[in-house]
Image (cartoon, rainbow, N blue to C red; front, side, top):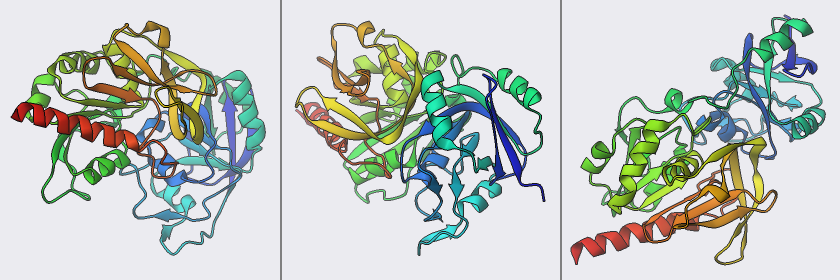
Length: 370
């Protein structure tokens, strides 16, 4: 059996290693994630659609794959890159190894390369288009294929991962819900719906292209704009929907791509980061309290702080590079964050934001009763 594999980048860089997932060839934008744990959540996070994810921690897979830690029904990333993949996980909850999981779902992966060198290269050069192959070791051909991959900028990937039809979230659903929340699914992680259910909400998930009138017809107490992959700017339909929802005074909470789409709906702009923020240890400052939160993040695009109108205030900033991490409308119950307050495999410093969302929904309900 040929276990050789290669990773080629658009700038001509080539890494030779061993296959540790499915056989074949796959392409995408090469990024790195600095988390030490949470690889199962990363593998199944729809926000990684179209990307080759490199884990900077050297040993991946030691606790296997569990039945309850998925963030979507299956892996969404294009390919996986690790230094060493554990073949024999040690965890009483493990149902299979990562290698078996990757092969089951057809995810091409490579191990045995210097991931430190690759990470430093991506940090210096920025996210690069790449290709992982177990079939072709010719450097010139692989680099040419990598250069032919479409750029992440300008790509609507949310439409490829959103649900096809609306559905009710049942896991942990309260018998007597306090709220009705509609989640606009741009690639929503299960963790978001789990946190909303824990708030006491009945959660309805709707496709990304759902109209404002159809959302309002569900009589929501709150609207969640979910995370998701790719560039927010091509999502003109959802942006128009959000524009129509904002004046309705239904509380709106955006996370990650939802934050960026809200920024566009406010009239702001977005831009592509050099290599993105991917990991579970990013420091963010809450400007209202001065407190520092350690956050889980996964995004390659960002809201331009200087493009936001005066009625939208910045609430959080990233302490690594000063970029946007949160905003809120001055008079309307609308706010968002760039990081992931629901992150199951990350820190929980930001979970208070779900409490803030619940308070807004409660305040609106009381105002309607008055």
